[in-house]
Figure 1 (cartoon, rainbow, N blue to C red):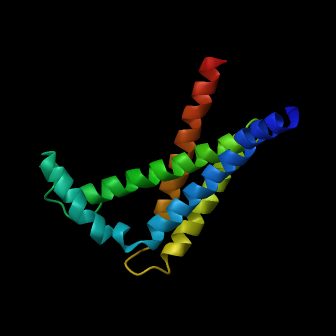
Figure 2 (cartoon, helix red, strand yellow; figure 1 turned 90 degrees about the horizontal axis):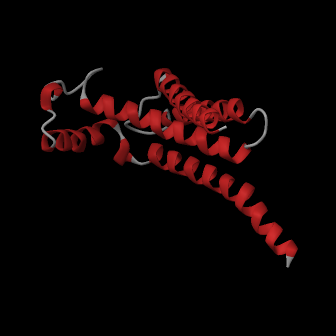
Length: 152
């Protein structure tokens, strides 16, 4: 009976966090693979949402750095790889180098994701996206670090 309970704790503390990491990596792969998430496809539904929310003050800019599509897509990069870093940190915790390793893992995944995009029609791999992903991972891990400092 005690062994089964111990296995349950081990599963909860180590196996499930890694399942979440690889499931999230699978979602990232799906986002890259799916034509639904190309810039051209997201622009139409993002603009539709922006119009419904009446946030059209930069709506006249359809392409480029300040378009809503650009802003939403880059925020998605920040959050997707930020969550990946937090999931990896949780899987590695309480290892001493969990934060740094989680950030490195997220950045490597970001680079591989951009490389994967180079094989997808309608996709453009960008080094700037890897930088944004690295920043998202860093920001998310910084928030976790601040939270841990606050509660200890």
